[in-house]
Image (cartoon, rainbow, N blue to C red; front, top):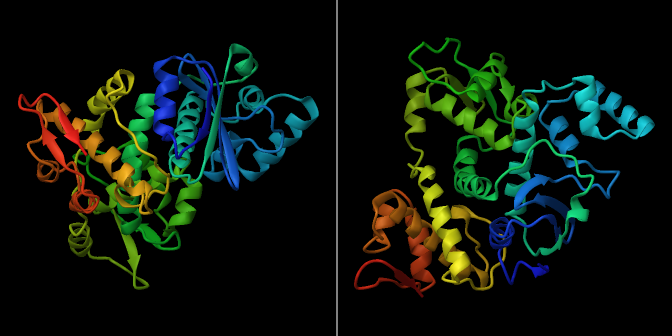
Length: 362
């Protein structure tokens, strides 16, 4: 399979789906005007993002240092060992036990997830896929990851990240625990407990991200959940909200969102449509704004259409039938009103077939 072109012809999501569905082995390189990255695949699964051709940049090492998994002294030590012994970073991490071996697969997957999320926001990209076992020979990995769940999570993050940034609008804003321990009735994820321990002392969001040993999105999400449970207060107008009731009132202003898990079934339906040729795609660019859409013409209509088709399939996955109209996407909580306004502005028309088993969107 030879794949080469730019993302005005195909979306990156489609390229990734094609590689996954055809279970290809090889390397996908994606290049923007000022940056580039690679994804290595084995049998359609992503195994690494580390370009073995580059000795100056290691994205996994950057990830580990960016989020405080490795300290500065450890980084210096690793750099010396890899340069003197010619050992790979993964070999050094394993031999020196600098990271808990049980935590390593989680950090590896988080790194791949964040890389893919970042790629989906790039604009004016070109891509090239080189297939073959020899391409991945010698590529070190800590696990293989299916494309579909990664893409599903990327779409959720693209949807929700703007809302998280509304709650914490600047990385300089300070956050602190309210001083009481959560009771046994309060359910908390490990990420929430880790972040709560960090903010026992008031810290800026950027400092929390650097200490949390989590991807930035996961840290923001943990902060949001802690705020909703009135376990932290956020600096506003240079003052802390010491009143938990005031914090709860402010939190209610956040707009409600639909359940992102409904996209799982829709993603597989989308894949089937892709294989059958039923999915229609027009030229698109990759500038992401609210609702994961592109603001600039002429790619805007293609991106809106892509998003609406995805949500229509998600509606069917959840309810067993296609929506009678696009308004049903809003009333069910899947789509925002802004998305439907954009669809109307682009003159997209939705129509069910007589038997209700298919739809057109033109």
